[in-house]
Length: 268
Image: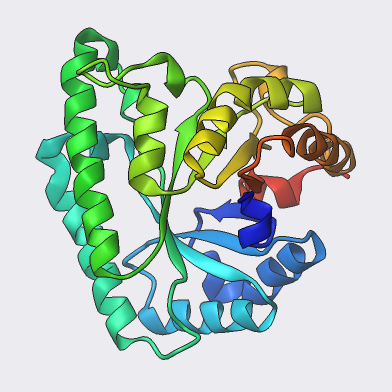
């Protein structure tokens, strides 16, 4: 069954600057509502008080917007850093236990990019095995919290295979998480669809919902990576076209825009 038949089309954004919910919650939620956002990935920041999260999540819910707990870093791909994973999940478990109905996170979203570290390529298979072990651990912790969990994965992850060679690493990640956002950072509809095609096919084969992530931050990697230069109107046009192109993949589930702060500051 296509993802669109199971769940509403997702339009999401990442919100990394969590302290903004203290002073700018109405501004954030108004922008999201005006732009059709129905999911916010909100960074866990233990310096922000639980009551501030509760108020923001409640106000978001009143506008039909889900808030998912966002965390993860490159170091989470290595087993030695599992205590950092525990700190995040312990905080989330305590928060969920104490929060009232309507003030709890609706899901978990992780962004783990060990391949961004300078020594990643030297011992790829060893690192991949550690990453897999931490993913298993993270998914178990999410199950204990009875929360759905999704992860960001780059469009090229299908070029890596699991250490036993049995499948692509992207396919393995999809099976474990149950939902993904494929980071296909390009600034035209056709390029986005082309970049995401292989992993969208994998997701459809597995029956796994897959959203597509796009970039709005000024990128040193090149102008074709981000919509920073094009602005909001051009981005909206291209994303509508990209969605139409990707709809043929049965479990394509929506668009995620990285990130709130840079998207809001873009030129029209």
